[in-house]
Length: 234
Image (cartoon, rainbow, N blue to C red; front, side, top):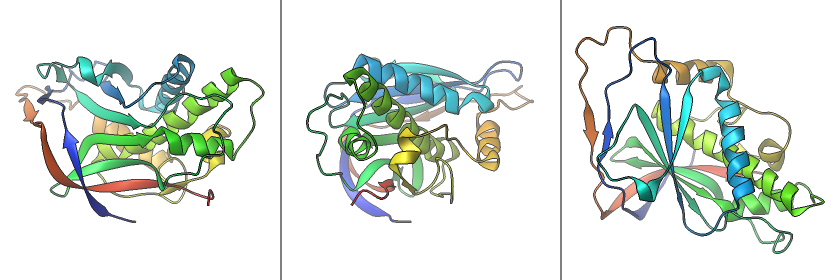
């Protein structure tokens, strides 16, 4: 697995991880979205639908937020902040653009996996151009959304499990092909889903909960990344 260091600016304020819910409650996972450029409503809707489908076995509720609307005073059971680079909107022009090295990456700070992920819509779009030629713009937008969801699920796996590990099959593979992104249903291996469920399930004994605060100030930091590659595109 490739690791390398880059410099990034984190501009999200304090993120408060609240005590876990009571054992009878449905765990809530917050996904905060940040878009560098424009995105299509159809792609965003399909991304949410496909991401929630992938997580059905985990029996969690996904709460979608816009990162720019967070005040830094909210509390969350679990949160992943996903920044979408490039243009997350699809049309039938520019489809032959060259793919970028990575579809997405999850940041590790001081060796610890963080809840911050980046997805590259331009690279996802380039993958789609090599997979199919949809008849309508709406079909293209929906397929782009499906690919965005699957890359997001891959990064979600790293962030929630706090692991740099990849698998040999399923969404957690280090390299995803266009068929993985836009083809038939794909998900996590049973053992991976079990680990996700365990990570998100509130503990049975919650008599003495304590909140954990993680501060991410606006500053430039050096982090390592866990990239997911676009396989079969070169």
